[in-house]
Image (cartoon, rainbow, N blue to C red; front, side, top):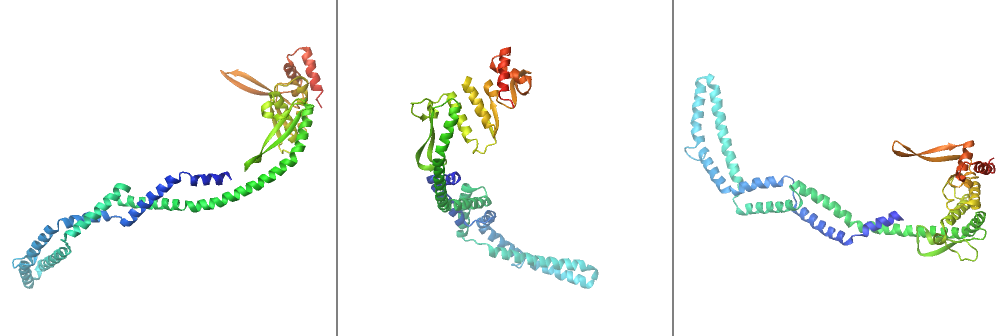
Length: 387
């Protein structure tokens, strides 16, 4: 549901900015597409522009070349004809002059080819001023597009392709949103169905959980404490169901139950949480439970009851407990002492296993010292819980 909702938000936010982007991209794509640019076109146009701008002079040069080569009585071709005639006679008189004869003929053919090339070039010159105007207009159009979209025609074309791809993606966003609407509706329906099942399961389980927690609270010194579970219906189903769940607690008889989070002391909260965890130990499916000073702000007889309750839980779960209460520590099957020492200017923490007589010393220390009376008390605590 969160993933679908996130995609919906991404598609709907900044709608005005996206609409403006679609308009801009549409204009850019149309402008580049309608220009019908070709790679290398600008270089061709520049060459044609140079030719068209000098067309008058080029025609004059072609006329002069034509006259000089073949179009006058004194032209090169006419004069070279006499050279060819003399070379032919020389070859007839002396076969050793074959090279001269062949060279004269080749030169004559080259002059004729040259004349024909000048004629073709001259025929291709368009002196119409409209042609030059058209070339310059096209170059101006290309320059305008280059100023907007890239330094070369190839860059302009690449910009157009990328803009078209982006435009296509944006234009299909509504189609994708329609698809998401269907996904969202399905997710909402699935969530509501799951929430209804969760509500029924909570309603069935709450009375038995309340009873179990009260029973464990009695073992922890709250013989007549009140405990119940409150359900407040929400306007719509959410990730935690269709209702807000609140633990209500009354530590003393005759007092109304109020939210546990707002009335319980730290010591009371510790015992209530221990009662809840004990009640859930058989169904939570958690193989290891860790209690970090859950016995805080309790002591004496209540401390012993807290230790007994943890001992009870350890019958079906691995229990780790960090404690300063000897009544709780004495219940453990194994002891570790946490010590801090200054080494090389730095504080280091060490975890040390405690066994045998050292267990007695450690529990005695927790009782207030290592006097004979403290050691006897420690031995009594340990003996009462040893196998």
